[in-house]
Image 1 (spheres, helix red, strand yellow):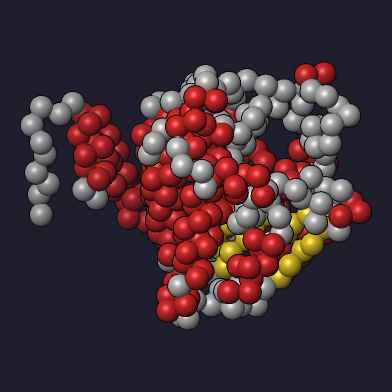
Image 2 (cartoon, one colour; image 1 turned 180 degrees about the vertical axis):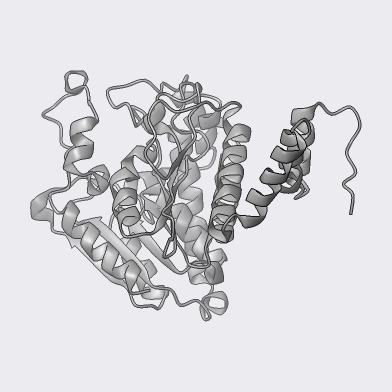
Length: 377
């Protein structure tokens, strides 16, 4: 079947249109080799035919991953640093390359793990977990959620369609993951875990298991109460004012926008509604790994307990005792991450609890337990 192109499209838009129609992978080589000498053309065709299936799959993922962020960020550019077997999408619209979405692609992956970062932070927070899984021969995708990691996020953090944009982004990423592997785990840190849980409950057959790190399935009592007040979102936009992205942490906004916090609460409420639907839940059985600090006063563990009670499965809980006093955001941080974060301590009140990032003292043990969980499912 010959694709029918809309009239008056420039070459770039034509390729974007063809990508949407599923023709891009077929036609991109043709565009690139129109002027090739015949011998080189023949060698090119031989290379394409002989390319291993895994290489073809990874090439398709790279194209899709790049196109997704070209659309989301407007423009992308080469990253200043990129490791072997890493796909990383950088942009001048981002605060720095550490905020960029990335994927680690081993040559023969056992499966794929998708990890979404939390509210106001970036893929940097999941770097140590991703690299550990990669060393265990899993492909790992760490996306950048809409509205995050940017130099200017004011419009994003007041966007009335923010929740829909999050959902659409999760769906797009999971579609890319499904095309690259039959075995796909999904998870995330804090709000990223919320979105992963929402996806799992809607598409249980597409998920091998769920990984939650400080999963935000319940917020503090004050946040929960505020979310139920009529007109609170409009007030939150006014209170947020111009949203500032620059702060002491290069990989996290200086604060969570009140409006985005209320949007997160909407997602949590939708999850609760799904969990309360006994008819829909009776066919869902899924293994869940959770890592949570008992000293976390941002996302109480009771929200996780409710999920584990209502979703049957071979679950693994990694509880960090309150005596370690591990803060919400520190659960996912390794000593190396904290050391390379270059956090500006002078810009915060260092005597305030959780003001300065600290490494999770049980980080390596947590990763070992997580690895055992993933390998067992």
